[in-house]
Image (cartoon, rainbow, N blue to C red; front, side):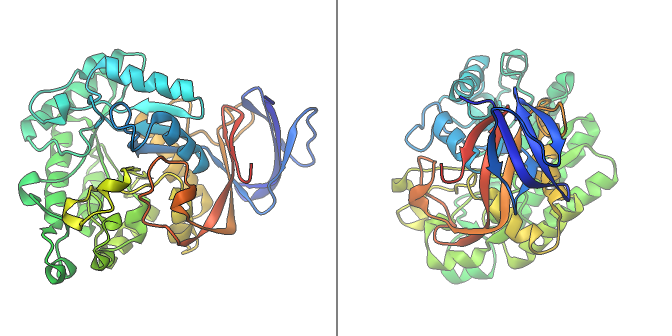
Length: 426
């Protein structure tokens, strides 16, 4: 396996350069570089970005390997330009002990396509009643720094306070799935005009916003780090903006699907559009885009949620919540944020690499592409287009809402520790 590559004529921060990669690091950046024994890759028309980092991925292993495995999810991640994934804790068994997070970490190491950072559960069994082995997970080989019951909200305010206090000891962060359960019991989609027309039980924005408001106040009181998962509402954006203006240690993420899709798609009754939190209105989508551009929302995170076909190809009420996200994320951001003029590629590098690595405390990731730095690099041709085909995806599941859609931007190559983990057409 070669460990030398030469990226020819690639756009790096506005300049067209060659990038030489050898021994896992960036060796040279400049014009007309030569490197003996290197594999040359023509990158004309393409941009080079720091390797993408996802802070919110469901890899399903252990226990739900029919939907995804660490290996298949790593392949999907590499195809999407990712060099690091954060594996959510709602597996079976739940990742609430040092043993489980170490298992997931080692599966990622064995796959070798990218770094897999396990996220530890906040509570035992993500049941919300007793704190999980937070300290043991932090001290484990996996060195967990992000904890989340994602899929469930830590709805008990005392439990949330205790968790925030605990992670302060090692500069950890609690990533909250903001969903007040009493306000969303049996809810199926966004509460609004469309839900009332369709007769599906609505999921009010206030169910998300009330938890965000409570938790930023708790984080301020405790002086701990809080991260808000998959923000979807205009009101949530305003609460986070206010919290940041007060100096509260809060960060937030938005998913690609919430940057593009709206609750109008539920009119099809196709469960491919059923997701938690739900697709919201066009006004919410525009507010999320503006907040991401402004930096009020810090990062894009995929919330990649694979499901076997039998749990999505059924009636809406019986279907699972969730969508695939890894392989289409950068294209969706290109479409919604770059082509719209809201962000530059330097902003994309921040929101999809630098900032998520900083929040997760992933010290070996998120660096700008520079001589001597680890060769974690994503090469994308933003002008090339492709048609999404669920049957050609690397994921074990097929539940993409973008099937058949023409998207701008193709991943040309992904480099992890200087190794080529994905190349278009290879």
